[in-house]
Image (tube, rainbow, N blue to C red):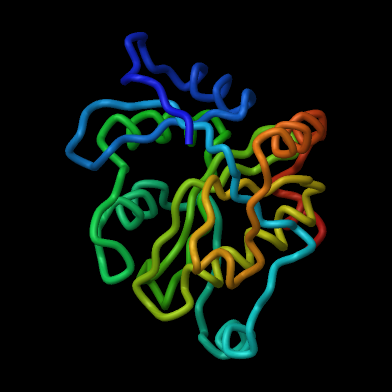
Length: 210
């Protein structure tokens, strides 16, 4: 992983967008650390949009859970869920600066959420940035079994409906690998990113065709 010293220039939503287009993304060491640094992994995590793997138990959960899935309703709730340590993680890198910047990007229409509800309760979800035909997944969370996996499955279907070419997961965890996530070298990633950025993806095509 390549990273620089904390930013010595003003962070803006526009700067964040330029960074993603260059294959770089920002992170912090922890929720309490005010500093932000650039990250460009030597091996990049991606989830091929034709390679999502749903286990039998997940498919059963998707059919019988009774959960509902919506997008872009509650950014604050999703990022709070992602920023809260829980049973699936002991810490988080989402600090107040990240929350603020991605909140601005949400208002600008670049940041999107996928939200999973059990009745009125938000029980899982994810957020990320959509630029051209690329979607950059940032973080996900769950408060019910399989809720984050259901959010990811919906995202994959939505991106396929919208003509996207790249789902960037940044890194690969065992959780993502079990769902079809792979690692590719930075040079290959940059080629795929360049092609995806030339595509006009439509995040809301799902509603238009459904």
